[in-house]
Length: 528
Image (cartoon, rainbow, N blue to C red):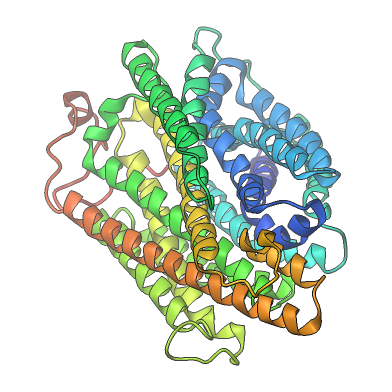
């Protein structure tokens, strides 16, 4: 392909990837505004955020295989159409339930696009050196998109209504549709490659059941019957999925891959890095707006400062990943991320012992940057470890595992930490006498109720709600520190000696596993 055209194809698929990444985090700063406008309760808030990564994680494995069958250009174009339609529906959603449905629909388009973006890069770039550069740019775009989400949300809300955070996707989708149709290489795919939609339904049932159980458990008065039923659905879904994969000639996941310690450590690093990133950024963005009263744009700029650490860390680690042992990059990065969350907590005005409540919110920025530095390094190293830990003929499957690891990490981070925040708030809020009970559901409800009270009652309620929210904020950050620290130790132990668990087939394949020191070997991340 003509050189200039190759790079235009990269720009086109990167635009699609940017939209996918932006929509993971763009609601972090828009959530308080749309929650008030749609009268969404605490549970609906979490579903609005989680519907997107939940559905995407369930569909990604099958979407990659379907792309092999029908052609990746066709999958990318289809994904763009679905993404544009869902964005329009979300922008004008009249209720929280419709918005949740639109976010799930949005995830269907994202799942169709995501594997196709990397596959089209692989097909377009024949030269290995150029392909490595292109994949590095691809990965940086994903990080930049996630980092810019809160800022983009805040900037749009400063001038438009909350639906603009979705409507902004539409012109980008239209431009990408035209560019893809003209520039991207075609191909009808391989009709003999099977597609397994049943497996996608099974894993989706497992994920939905698990998330529902977590959210129900965090309610003020959880229903044990609902929790048990959800856990049974989850366990059943995952169980039948695993059994089905073990009997398929072309499984979505070959579980023998996880015998490779390098790949397993990469999955661990990818999931935990996104667990902390998604959970901490969402909760920090809410505190900046709901407790400190910052504008969405100001809150977005503070949260997005993580990119100051994450982007250069990702670039540097991308150059080191084939020379430095993976246990140092993944294990060390998780530990640095844990230190960053500790620093964020210590520098949060009114929370830590160092700064009183009157200090500016910007004091948390050094902690946020350090967190981004550590976890940005982990994301790059984890991607290389997952791809490098699989034999070449499993590269496509490993890419799907990589993408699902990140989405599951984001999903569980928001679900677990968001539910903990809600539970602690409800358990510790001290409502002034005569305050409606609805104020105990969430700080959003408390602020809405406070607007209807006399000045003294309003002030007392807001102070009590802020104190209860800060209790939850503190605990969620402590949990994040513990999870990252434990993950860092586990990754170093996992890669602390020569991997002896690769399958014979992997041992015979060049680049199929780590070397003696646990460094990543094989080719840079690629797809199919």
